[in-house]
Image 1 (tube, one colour):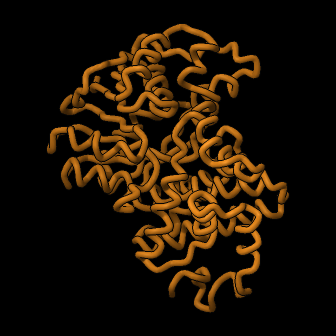
Image 2 (image 1 turned 180 degrees about the vertical axis):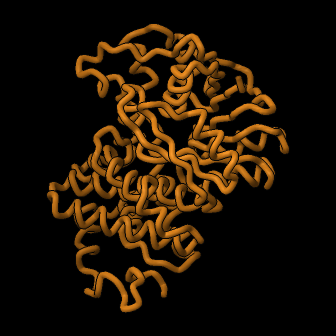
Image 3 (image 1 turned 45 degrees about the vertical axis):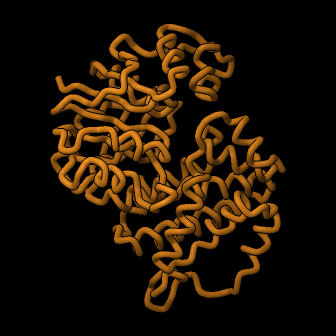
Length: 356
């Protein structure tokens, strides 16, 4: 059996480790924070209070009473050393986006492992996707597969039906990851468009913040429907301009992940947006959530990337103004609604504002 190492002991990394252990796979789980590693070491067979230390809202989402076991199976070994994955094995990377480059830069180039990138987002400084960062650090011949799609960690822990993507230009590597993760309750499709998958799953977090803001303002279901639809247009517009396939955004990494993340209170990005819409300040909301909200950093990178490829992203731009410009959510909404009227699509069939 291939050796499996999971980098990142947060909610998603821990969930993937548990998922693989349930399949009978021994897993080595590492987190850079020694305090968090100690909490993970105490995770075995403990109940609600201990669960909430690391999993936060996961415990209450599984059981309203909080009396649910969220434990690391014996097949999950929590390691303290900053180790490299085994040759021929799998390395699952689920660290925050801003920590990905520093982690991978410490790994040996040319290692014959399959790298599973479960981190979502865009790198702020470069606007690169996570798999692009991985290739820069690991080398162009590294077997890199993106694991992404509509997959809220609490529901995966509960073994509720989930469908996700293993995306890579390397078909064999995508197939290996598909076989590793697939179960009767966790269906894995392959995709040959990792760029589209990553842009879709990163940018949906920006729209999820906007969706939460709209709900926090009490704007109603009509507004949500319009927001998700126009948000999808922005994601597709950016993705196609960067070289992704348009059809990718009509699948799990586009519509699927967008609907899930933009409507669920289990989503950190939606939760943050709702808090902002209800008048809470950004710093206070982030402190209360207590976990990384990837959409914040992704918003800044998305706006920068849109400028580079010369496409319009008015929703993302207004989210950036709310997050970083001190603009009140209601003022950003009014500016969005006051944009000049035009057709939904151009005469040649391209989405308006696509630069064509």
